Amino acid sequence: MFTALLDTSVLWPSLQRDFLLSLAAEHLYRPIWSSAILAELERHEAKKLVALGVPEPIATERVQFLLSEMRRAFDDSEIEGWEALEGSYGLPDPNDEHVLAAAVVGRAGAIVTTNLKDFPAHLMPTGLQVLSAADFAANTVSLDPHLGLRALEEISARSGNKGPARSVAELLVVLVERYGLTDAVDVLRNVIGAETE
Image 1 (spheres, one colour):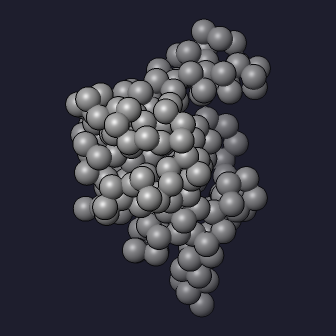
Image 2 (image 1 turned 60 degrees about the vertical axis):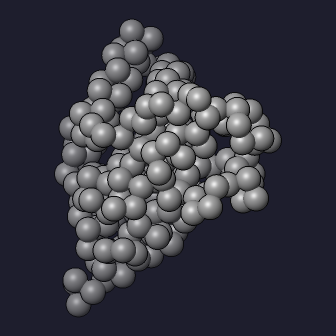
Image 3 (image 1 turned 90 degrees about the horizontal axis):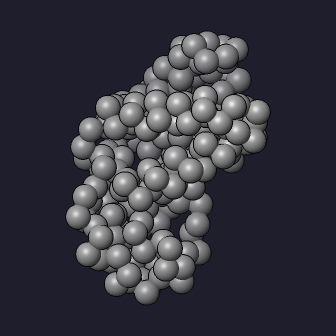
């Protein structure tokens, strides 16, 4: 199964994270990350919730629940033993070295990140590509569009648990307008169109 390291930058946006992890739950790929990535996610997610008006203790509790659910659902995804490689790649931003180190140790085929410029192709080990969330989502959904649609249907079914329920059609709009996942959404809309003909 294809392995992709998900950087903090693609895990921080809530619906995008849910979509990427739901695709993994459908066994379209194996997600990996490191303790450092989860620590970054913990900090940024807590700040986001507080900025949205969630009291700090509740924000902390929600973030802890999120991380425990990620670890439970993907219990082989947290890569260990990457620390020895950190600092050995010469990346433009030394703070990104841990991401590449975890990808190498985890034998990832891709790093999925919004920080594409921080992972120049000429510094990447052979066989490791760097993809935006939009490109990765499009590639992954294209492997099996029906499973991609099922992932989105699962998100829709869960959406009423935390707030207003969202239909698949509403989620597709958000994935395009907020996250730019246009190509993946086009594939999913084609499946929906074929099923309704």
